[in-house]
Amino acid sequence: MRRIPALVMAGGRGQRLGLPLEKPLLPFHGKALIEWVVDALRNAERIAEIYIVTTKNTVKTEQKCLKQSLKVIRTNGEGYHLDLKQAIFNAGLKGPVLIVPSDLPALTGKFIDKVVAAYERDGKDALAVFVPLERRRELNLSSDSTDTHQGIEYAVSGVNIINASKILQDKLETSAIITDELEAALNINTLKDLEVATALMTKKNTLIL
Image 1 (cartoon, rainbow, N blue to C red):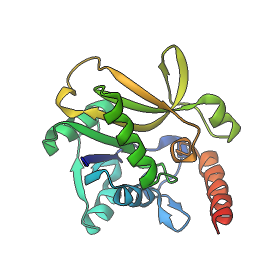
Image 2 (cartoon, rainbow, N blue to C red):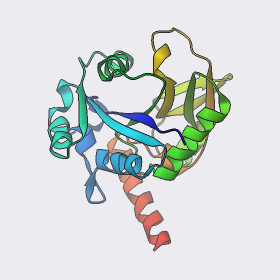
Image 3 (spheres, helix red, strand yellow):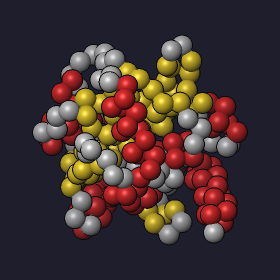
Image 4 (tube, rainbow, N blue to C red):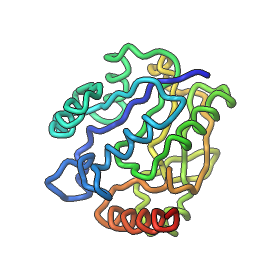
């Protein structure tokens, strides 16, 4: 069973939250947001090493991750796509790489393994995980970050797999997972998103118990 590396993108300012605290460090059900993501990656059977991608905007996040013996890649903070390319080059990654945001607290190892399996099954250079816009609205979550797949606009989950060897190509053949699962739908961009996510996860945990 092939295992692949993962990059956790944790360098954004999180300006829409309007808080002094770095977004990856926001407390959520007893842990920082980024810790939920890292724990999910550690619980996944299909993930090898984990890299945290930071910038000058997330120095405290970087320090926390280093204290936890996580591998950290500091990038120039010139935008998501440039930072992603820089991280891939700096880590010397080749072949498929999982990319996840640091603000997806409902993410699980089981969901990650399902994404990796879908990438291998589809055989494309890249895979993106999208959430229907109506699902985000149904959950009362913001839908500012969107992309189009096969002519339909979706909310972006931030979960992707890309063939790192082809990162410099302008266009990659891409497959997609369209899902309304909380694991992908519950990314946090605003204070309202944080409130909604906190309530949803409280309800989910209560149901599990």
